Image (cartoon, rainbow, N blue to C red; front, side):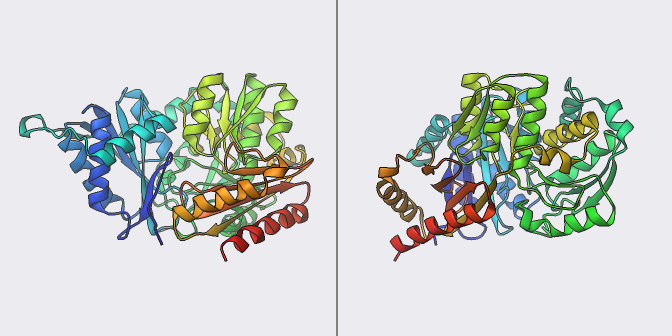
Length: 452
């Protein structure tokens, strides 16, 4: 199986197979050339392979004359915010986000902390593949300095948001369980919650990279968090992936709710403070259409990928954007998914309304979304299958914004190639779980029949 995945989201692979030092050094040289030997911020999540990747990347960045600012173990949004504050020419985050522990990856950013858009990603790949590197002589090599202020700066920025009322939150005395999966969120989320006056119960908050559960904070992976919320009679439970750009929620009833609700609830709150356009991906729940109608604002949809969402947000001056994975983008902070800011927003929402999280969820029209995937051997097979799907469903006038999406009256199914794993993703949504499940399964059977 070809495990090297290169997309607008960055580069991911299995450590010791497709993800290795020579690959990383080459990409660092390409990024250093792309950034014109400028200032580059480097950080990583807690994966045990992160230190190996860090040294390989430092080699390439120094070789291209870059001034490297190493912020250590930090969430992806924290790294990007520090790059923005420093007006850096680029950044590299070492993370495979929600992928299993045997994976690692690198994500690139330019323009003061913004992830690469498709055009920038294509230019970086052109440099990487062409070998048009700008290596420096010995007297112009780069340098490295450590920076341990990124976490405190991120917290301070969040607390300075006009709609975060620390005094009000403290008066609620909320009891919160936080599950960081021993990832990068461990260094910031418990600290932020305590500064908000919450009673904090930690689960997996040691940034040692030894993941006690699957790092994707999907409901099926959060049984231990649900049990702890129940045992401690907590008001809410939160879970991050390994780099904390996502946030999942467990309700006061100790139920892991769909990650779609993270973006839905956060958008509902933001729009109550400031009306404006919203950007979501093509595979995000129809609940976002309800939120847009509620506040009478336009909703735009894009391909999956933070870079795609950010690009559209900047074009339409959106006040919030995100994905149904639990990733939300707050432009007042920066243009990337930020699970830490999302945490503060949800806490503020609870403090303001006085309701429980389960009561807030019950006010939103219910849809059920099913997310499944088909493992594939290589990316060429994925491309072939997507072409076949477009032809097969052509008579149903599919939406081709991202893959192939067939839209019904109160349902849809979306087939697309993953940019982070060697899989074809099949998502479906309908009014009931049974309807969504039938739609998803029948679509998967059709795709599998093409695979022989």
